[in-house]
Image (cartoon, rainbow, N blue to C red):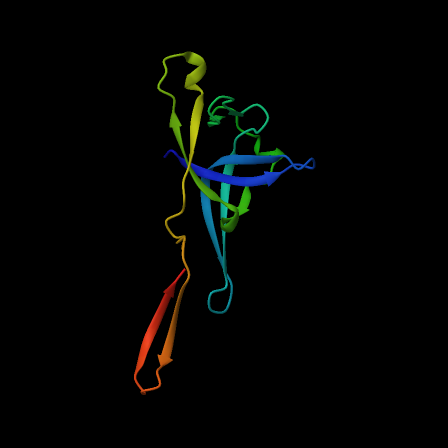
Length: 138
């Protein structure tokens, strides 16, 4: 309901821009053979010019959920590998201007495992023909 997608992009002047959107459909294209499939996300995108802002003091990113791009002015499909999951939450404010803006909460995917170490296992043979395993964690 409040989850969406973020795609990192860049303009011609190398400024990084995050593109935010909401899922409308997930499409899986399967080809002949084992493991030959492509996953596409169809999204409605928020306007990056009028509909996004960054708080200058805290760096919070926000989107105006009423400011969406027209469907004929953008490409609605992205590859699943390009996407980062985000959640949108409302601001705790009663001001009318704040009601149109959602704060963006970027999350990490649960399918990606980050390893902070490298592990190596070696079988070592001593001179007295006794072997043991040596495990090195870096």
